[in-house]
Amino acid sequence: VSVVSAPLYSHNPEDGLGGYAGIPRKMTGVAELMRRGGYSTHYVGKWDVGSATPDHTPAGRGYDTSLNFFTHSNDYWTFAADRRCGHEPITDLWEMNATTPFPGSPATRFLNPSHCTFMSQRSDCLYEDSIFANQVKKVILEHHSEKPLFIFWAPHTAQGPLQVPDLERKRFSFIQDDLDGQRRNYSAMVNWLDTRIGEVVRLLKEREMYNDTLIIFSSDNGGPLDEGANNFPLRGGKFTNFDGGVRVPSFISGGFLPQERRGSWHSGLMAGWDWYATLAGLAQVDSKDEPASAAGLNGTDSFDLWPTLSTRDTASPRRELVLGTV
Image: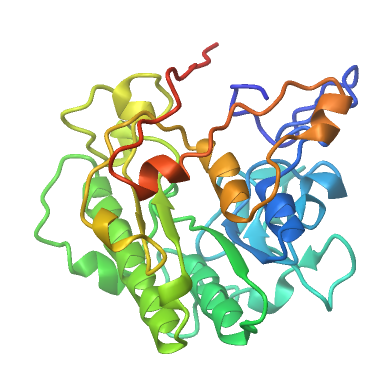
């Protein structure tokens, strides 16, 4: 997999296997493993791992439903992508479920009226991450308990553009900064997300699902220093290989987590992609990627860390973390 965060339109015509931006077509995604383990699988939020072919979309990666945008970022109110088709904006909001044709269709039913923008927020305007949070709740409410549930929720918040509902931003008016209000916006976005996560946790408890749920929270990179983030005391930020760019906040919670591990620290080395083998182990399926190996791709660099995370005495099996650069 390329270490370059390439635009989705990038294409190498000489490489039909992995010559598109995103995950190579023959690599197995985590939802495919969970589905193999009998789980109902749902994706919500920022996709950003390919859309060149149906194989690259959530429908081709093992998800039963999805509500997502594909690109690096889009507008939180107009859903316009960060790239145009000629001179025309691209509305980047997609859904896939039992009522849509494969691999899904534009999610036009969620679009805001044309007057809705970050600078013009009215009562009939929906914040994009509100749509995503509501979808997560809908999946939970409609879930049937005879089948285990896997939700991958990748909120747009708190990634650029730094747009947040006016009411939330006003709560942080006490922050005075010299970044054109970006520190204030960034803080408001993090707080907004924290509130929505709390609502989802309460819903799991109301539906008596919490005790059997493992909640995994992790950032995908350090905060961007030019957009109001602060990774102190770590050096650097997003787009760097310093600790501030790759060492991120992460925790696990939920009733499935053993009581003796709650409120404790884990200091062993772990990569974000170790969740691939860890979740496969929990779903009791093999994490070996046979289709990738058959296609000549490298095997998975992923360790099952559940024995380490669920007990106090087991050391992490990961001994190194290879960082790519350009």
